[in-house]
Image 1 (cartoon, rainbow, N blue to C red):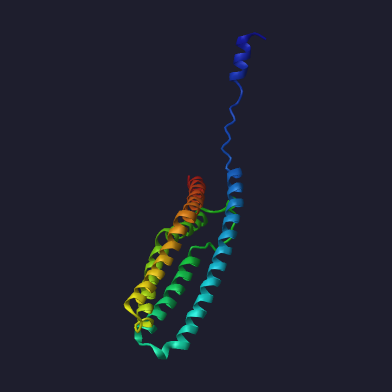
Image 2 (image 1 turned 90 degrees about the vertical axis):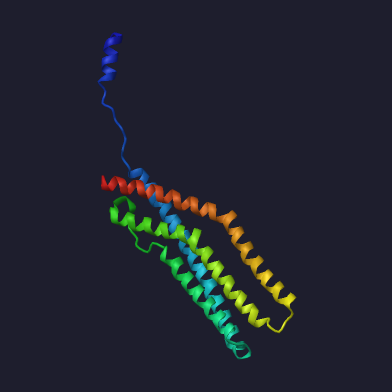
Length: 200
């Protein structure tokens, strides 16, 4: 067989372009299950901590509400409301529907993408709003509880609370937030690709 025959034989071979997305879906399914499992544990743990906090705040109110005026009651009520709303918002971002991504519809993929969008908003926006409103509630609480103390004591109490809340926020933002957003964005990109393939 000469060179021309070899060239014709080679050119005549069928080109197999692998466009099968089953491997991508299978890989994504595994990653999605791990991600959802980790997210579920985090939300359960966080909710338990917040519920314990509610019990503690409730005890403070019941034990001392007769000693203070209305700002004390309003600040406690605001903290209660903020914590309950935050728990609701946090769980709203969790995808309760379970389905195999390999055989999913575009509607199910869109449902998962909506949950990821909520998770991103919770991390980037709602947590910040929650902390600011919580800080305002705590300042009102301190102003009432420490009303009989010196101005220096009141200022120091507000400074300590402010430093603590700001410190926690900055630690989360620079240590955890980038990794969390990276995971969300990666999952979002993969799900968008699968949805595009389902709608094409």
